[in-house]
Image (cartoon, rainbow over the protein chains, first blue to last red):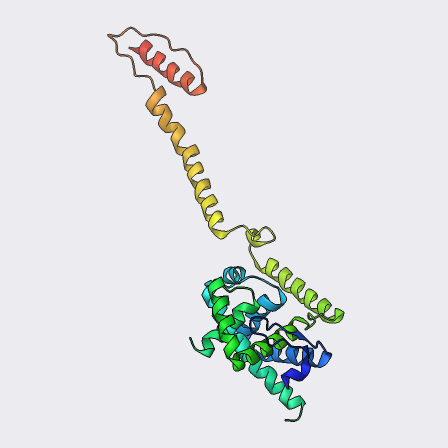
Length: 94
Length: 156
């Protein structure tokens, strides 16, 4: 399901960043998923994805360590991935 | 390392926060793990979609209502507060320090001048055996004192 939203995908190891379909639907799903996150997860994702702060800067902003930022971002991404997939499945009637 | 460990690295890779050795390890793992490659692709899709989410724009009427409420709360706070808690926001500790300094200054002004006069400027009463020397008068206090000494001296 997720792959349907992509324009191009590189499966080559070490070069897996994808150019995605930025159709309103996938962006809307991402927006809904972000809104359903816990505030702490949303906070750190916004600092990284929207504001573009580095780990060091986020650590200063949130008064935590850089490894904590890395861990929290991973966990937040795990959770938003789960919500995103559920929303996509719901929209596709799966 | 497990696939979960590599997925943490994938998250950091997306943020360009991997060390060289971590990058090498992840690249090697992805060559042999299709699941982690799929995971990386999924995270790429979600991350790019997130970046295209428009920033929230506040409707004008909501913005006006919020600003009005903020002004109301701010003005009511100023009215309720004491005079030093208005717009200037003087720290309360500083007020107490200033009050203590003022009291100390008041005590210094009211008490210390008399101590100086009694210590430094009060002349000893001349005895009959010592020759009396007319004191040069500089102040009203000294005038009164010198006069009384003169009278006492004359009476004797």
